[in-house]
Length: 299
Image 1 (tube, rainbow, N blue to C red):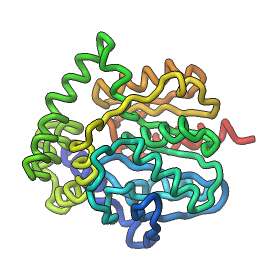
Image 2: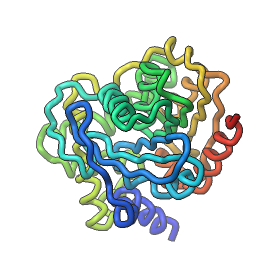
Image 3: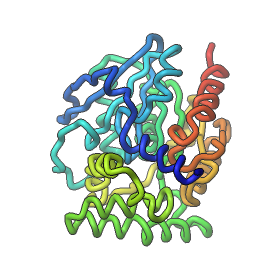
Image 4: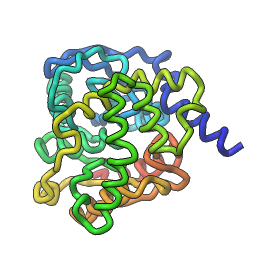
């Protein structure tokens, strides 16, 4: 029963919830790409940045809660559903995504914003805060994959090598061979357990492949996991919440520990019964932690 419940949860994660049926996305063009977004609520602007396997629909449990206090915007990053942007860039990473985010903020005239990101979305948020600190009010970061921070440490070297050899390098080879579904099987199984991809309902597997273009762009990039200046991160002077899933893989735990070392005043929370997808795996605990964080920093 627990396994079935987990698969149903992951199915929702990959397919996206019914939010798209009630709120139709708006399409805009920024930074020479199209982006789709939805928004709800009023107040200070808050932008939600999904992970690699998601899109604007992934934040349904957060949108309902946060829109009672904020003007919440959830958008699909450039290579995610339903955007139709060609895979033309030879260099794609969180820095590319951060430039898109900056352009989105300027185009919508949002001023300073709160950012909540998970996985590569968290890396994107952190990269924007470093490059444009004047744009950001606060950060909620759920496991940004700044893998370069730990790859040379005693514990991190082994975790980095394991991630690369068991997940990233095989997935990259599959993408280069034109086997996008095989690549996503490797990635989904790597994050959530061997055999998970093939046990998903057909619609969920299709959704995973539908959002595979981001991973393909990163896999074909000359620098998919760039470094981020530790000195510049140390200089951030905004409220930060660092979120870790209790059951996430080791390399993500190590990166979060390094982030906490760089930002000793940042708040930290561990989301129980959750892995790398904590906003979806345990939305109640995630939402409670985020609301408590914002409440403690209200003037």
